[in-house]
Image (cartoon, rainbow, N blue to C red; front, side):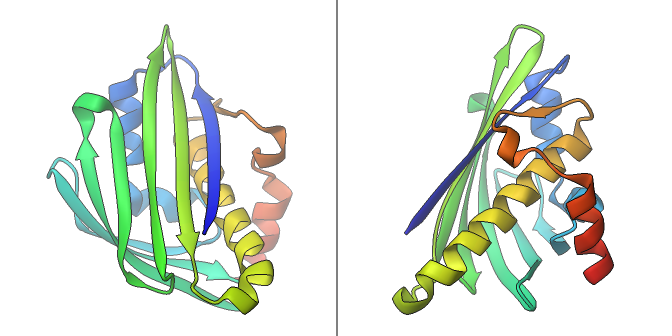
Length: 165
């Protein structure tokens, strides 16, 4: 099982506005070049959502359908795969108001269920997922900063991915 985390700060924002933006999964393809499609089947403000994802991954697609648990009162969005290419995939978005800024934390656990390929597939999937989250956060909220500079979106990399798609 692979675990990943990404933190970001959205300046001059409210947690409610960031929450509303993050739940707009249908917009992720606008900002994240790995996202081929994100089809929202059941959306916020329903308490339980569902979406279908396709990400460009290696020379093919990574596909899954996930169920989201929206807990706006706690500023959390939990998700778990219900069908797809992972053996298991789940995670959590959490937000926290910090004065005039919002602290965003994303974490996920995944397993392809192929131990012999874990050394090859897991690092690529981790990079693709983290880049997708980082590009989306920075795209939705211009001026947002990803905490780890290594995770900060690179516009040149995004252009290369888009050109290759």
